[in-house]
Image (cartoon, rainbow, N blue to C red):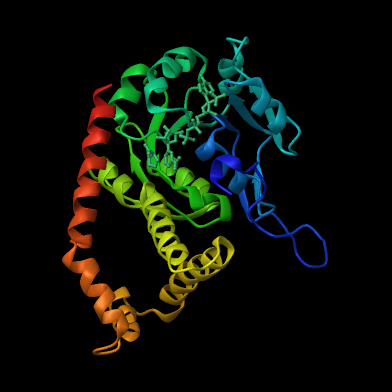
Length: 300
Ligand SMILES: NC(=O)C1=CN([C@@H]2O[C@H](COP(=O)(O)OP(=O)(O)OC[C@H]3O[C@@H](n4cnc5c(N)ncnc54)[C@H](OP(=O)(O)O)[C@@H]3O)[C@@H](O)[C@H]2O)C=CC1
Ligand SMILES: O=C(O)[C@@H]1CCC=N1
């Protein structure tokens, strides 16, 4: 299941005895504009039983179908912007945090639409790739602050890595608030804005690189005669197990690769093919291409 196919569901499990855990984290009023793959991934963290948001989260989405689907979720009020030009302005009025999760090309129109409906002191949080703090600040009143962020889709399972960067008007408290918000879906790394596009090429896009590797190894398994189901079990299990081992062992990826690679054994031959084909350099080129695209998005 992709993030785009998920509906917003709390990320934390309820205790086994069925009682609700005490809220561990209180967040102020939140509006979330854009309930696509990323918007809904973040929403799932905010709906965790350990998080208490002041009032329902006000979600908007362009199409009515998705808004209607989310409107039934406890803790959420959702409206569609299609046919309701005031929906975004209503959602942000009185909200302390406004998450902007529409496509980069739609950001500027959205900011112009909501600018004079924002609460003074609101924190506008961008998840849009490439769009700079300067663009946000140019289109918003000086009474609101801007924080740029770059989450990733494992937010759906509470395992996101999110980069955040302060805007020129954001206080330490604003940044701390945004950190707490993204910690509901995983871990948070603070970087200067000058590094956020680079971070996006690594962790923002990173899940796609991992899935591409999984797809490629699965194809190799099928070519070797395994059924699709067997190939998926072998490859998905191997990626999940290797990642878990990396985290649990505290060892470096290099140490763990060497453990697998018996001298003069089979893995050594396979790894040599991948290295000779330039796999490490390919990641350098791929992330350079992503960075160039982020700069195009920034230029509008
Ligand atoms: N996908 C990812 O892994 C990541 C994405 N991002 C960023 O997140 C943002 C969203 O990306 P993603 O979720 O993938 O894209 P999606 O297209 O899945 O989501 C965008 C959503 O915004 C809705 N929308 C469009 N216009 C408006 C509007 N005026 N008001 C309210 N909602 C609107 C769309 O509705 P409808 O579909 O009905 O048109 C859609 O559901 C982008 O800026 C992207 O750069 C950041 C990190 C990772
Ligand atoms: O592909 C994109 O533009 C977004 C940003 C990082 C991941 N997805």
